[in-house]
Image 1 (cartoon, rainbow over the protein chains, first blue to last red):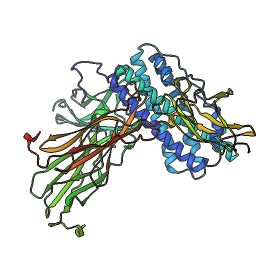
Image 2 (cartoon, each protein chain N blue to C red):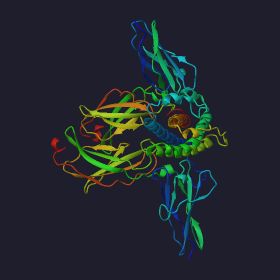
Image 3 (cartoon, rainbow over the protein chains, first blue to last red):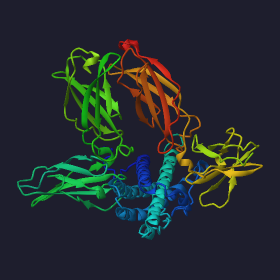
Image 4 (cartoon, rainbow over the protein chains, first blue to last red):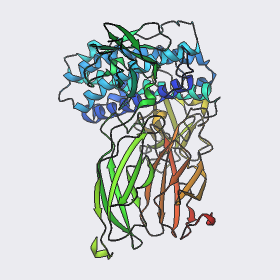
Length: 199
Length: 210
Length: 210
């Protein structure tokens, strides 16, 4: 059991433990997102050439995130933490709708339905953890609630099946990409802040 | 008749890092009908909350479902006993959910006999308990295997993350008992041992026996 | 004599998630001197770029150094073959560097014999491939270890992120061969296996042997 100094009021989870748990959770969320994308791709996207159309970007493209090691290492850790928060917040709404809309896909397998619900839940849990970490690293700074609005719900409900399936494909492709970014940035931040860049 | 004695929070456990339960032992009831309330607050918060569910986990318990379970904070939990003559409060019990994970036992334990370089060995296979996804590393489990012949001492093997294990240097003709248990790789407690499984090693080994 | 045949982009690989290389296979050259240009554009960009470096990775290749390598963005790559009679363009090849990482094999693999509770075990240690920046956390590698005695089947152990591993279930007196390979924690391909390393287990174990 965590040893809280007797009489101490504020016995708390250390920053190192918070990062350990956040990284384990971001790893799990990306693992699920990848599996969900692969399953959807195999079952619904074969031969439809969706990848060629998926290049028009994700709803989080407005959040300028580092795209190589040098950029990721040059950005200040507080800015990177806030970026991670921004990307996570940007996914709250689409994940909520994904859980309901996925059930309307023809013969959507349980494995996809379960993953959509699990990711939505774990994403909220990771957001809670990141707010705790940011609160610890930047006490007092309420931080600007940066996030990117999602307006993709109508496209998930289109009558034309091909367009609707492409909308799902693009959303899952973006979820796989963004959850990988978050996982990568958190592993970087953990090494930098907890292990002095010597993981 | 008197005020109730001090209750004691005995144990809290999470089976899969997603929910948890705490149990307490009542003190003396002072000869009067006594009721118990569990209160908790989270690290850095002023708000005092009451137990969300006294029923699910049976008497003298409080069950925290997913919505009430946070991985990011330490819970400060107390139990208060109250009767007509007064009340008394337990010592605070601190809970960090990651530290109280005790998984359910492994399943489908299957021992089989094999032969390598002419020597017999026991190959035991099993599967993890059916709980949060272990494949992805969200909950990494390590295993221990124990083995003995009837009436002997157990011999224990630390297996690591594998879900199978080979045991050499066995005595042909013996009947062995095998059990496995598991634990999260960092914090938490060993599960109960799995059901006992028996395997009889043939007395003399010729290839055709297998 | 005729226009060249269609070239084909065969493979793209990044050894450390910081640079990458693509290779193509020329089509027929139509009996004339033919030259090749690789063009690409990145997702969301109109600008068509040419291969920054045709030399570094040898013939029929294009090497993208750190400055020209971005993650989490799709490269649309084509190769054009041109000779006096005309030209022909390959099918487009879509690449996100995140998914083409194949590290070099691990290094300094050192097996050693140890004893714990009177039981022999093999402790294998290694280091990550030098190009991979695991220290900063930019790249996280997982490892697999395989082990066998001469003439037997390999037995593989998923090790996770550590760079050492203990193996208990062993046959005293045997000579074992050990190899390790690695892969990024999520996407990409396993490296080649490391060089074979040999270790002889003493046949009977007494404390003084070690």
